[in-house]
Length: 94
Image (cartoon, rainbow, N blue to C red; front, side):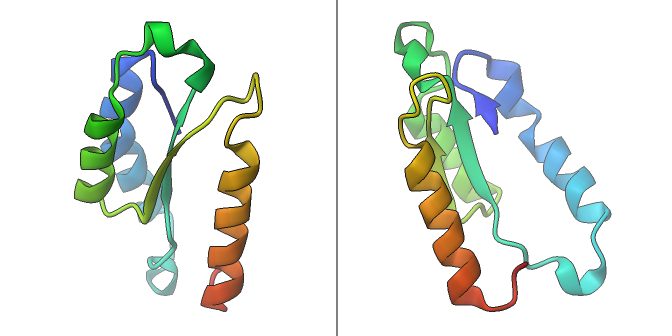
């Protein structure tokens, strides 16, 4: 997750993913990852465009990019439904 109003939050994603993957066992390395931008309710303070975030998501092999607002709840349910569907469909991700 990154903050759409804070450029350094998305620039650190690559480092966080590297650290995360290093902590996994070899057979766990196929975990599907979503890139989620938070603070969608602060559009007027947006620094990271959706286009830029989608490019980063594709480059780092995230399966999908979303944006949401925990303050308003916008897209939160959509993200959890998507993640639940991926977990159910895959049969191997727990």
